[in-house]
Amino acid sequence: MRSVIVVAALVALAGGLAGCSGDQGSGPTTTVAAPGTTSPPTVAITLPSGTPPIIVPSPVSTVPQQGPGPGNPDPEPEGLPSRDDATVDARDYQQRESYYFQSPTGNIMCGILADAPFGVGCQLAHANVIPPQLPDCTDAPNRKVAVHTVGGKSEFLCTSQGIFVGEPVDGTWKGGGAILNYGDTLVVRGVACTSSEQGIRCDAAGRGFTISADAQSLF
Image (spheres, rainbow, N blue to C red):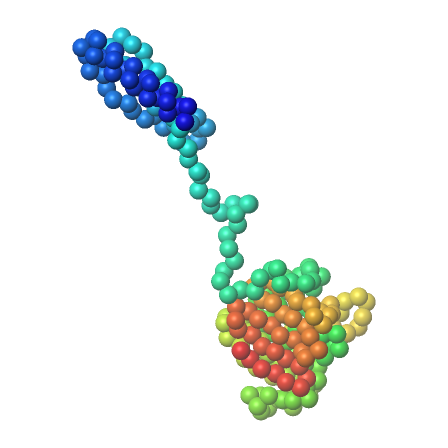
């Protein structure tokens, strides 16, 4: 406010001096600080010939626009599980470039693989129910029920290999990776897998599956 009063007084002074000299002074011009400087904008009033210009601070302020940065990160892609949903540290399940875990019973073994074509998936050591989509699966050692999601598509598999079985951990002989306890959720690479007494559910941007010995489904 004080700056506005000073500017008004100076403008009046400039008009008075111009009237006395008979010369017309130029109107007020705004001088803006160069980009990258911290100097505030100023108003320069040019007085009649022979009188030096008077510069006073302008009451104008600017608000910088926020962009992506350490304090304002880019949002996560829409539809992916939030990292805030994780209850475990993904590093505890990492084996080289992939992540492996198993249910507390050890019957469900899962992997989030680094490479296509399998993506995230789980397989059963034993299935009480064989899904009708796998008519040739028999639960024999070389015909195990599995499910996986990759590239936005979920499907059943009948496998003779340990595709989603990690290496033994904690000095045990059984493969499968670390245990994902009931109620825990592992989130990595936009995939969230949750363990419960009803089985394991994995979600990758709205596509995924649930699997247990008694039921398997895709979504």
